[in-house]
Image (cartoon, rainbow, N blue to C red; front, side, top):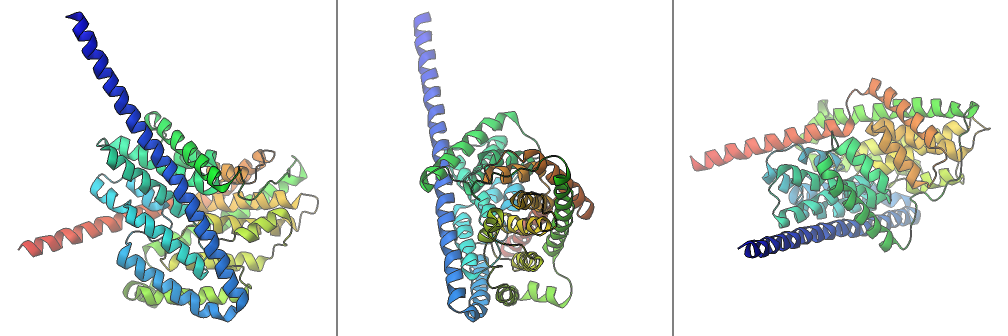
Length: 451
């Protein structure tokens, strides 16, 4: 009898272990899929950006037709086929971590919406919008992992949310090749607390997605290359104060504007945005074309080339670039097309640092550029640890970690005085409110149909 019970116990244990391994392997497959999707997205985005610049170099005036028509097409396609794909993608991911109705979560993180996010963001970059692919990659990663979670039949709410959190973190890690930043971003921005039961899932997903992206890229690359610069304690820390204060002020104002735009633009312009969104997007495209023409194409796309050149010292910063890129990013967000804020924010921050470096001749200019990046980025997202780790990993430089941290936390404090609310948190609240309104409207329509 005991022998029979032992055999039964071993069989059950074997079945449980087989089931657990099956779930683990499927989860790993999901993380690999996130890495592949992030790599393909990056290739498509880079190609679209280069094609945009080729069009501009061929004839700058052609952009006055390409941008308005392309952005209007993007808005129409998004509203018609990919509703919910507008904007960054990070607010949508944060919202799904707080929504109780998983039928709504599945609609927000549908693979169709993720595909639309990739296509429409790429179209926006092709047309010259000042947007990035990193935020959208967060939503894409969350959508892929949510699909695998549904396939596994996860019914537990905390498990589903843990998998979504892992997908978003893996998206950041694969987009920037910054695995630590993916983990910190998940802790600091996506989740209000770090739950022990989901930490292993998230860490595994980040590592696998990051490794996949590295393998596909063909080596362990860094986003902005290697910057061997330092900010020794002393007079050089004037740059920390300057970049922290300016970055916090600029980033806080930027967040305030975007939060206000999310509520709706007042007046006549707001009525056009509400009643004729495609026309409004086309008008935003006209403004972007003017800014691009005035900047000789510098405001088009992510701003990666400009930031990279500033870090290397092969480009001098001008306040005109900061102002025009700042305006172009706000206009691109106002247009309502899909697209992120990470890369443009880093480029704007690099211009702040480059401008400050002109007044500090005894401090390494590349180091001040990095401080400007982290200061402005921290001012926008109000996540100082994420900002520090992202910039540190992107430039493969741990020598200025202390200066980066000091700048990021100073910028965070200044930004909080300008904008008391977190940008992505408030945008997530606005998104959830719109979703609740949509569900109420649909429920009322169903009642009328039945009546």
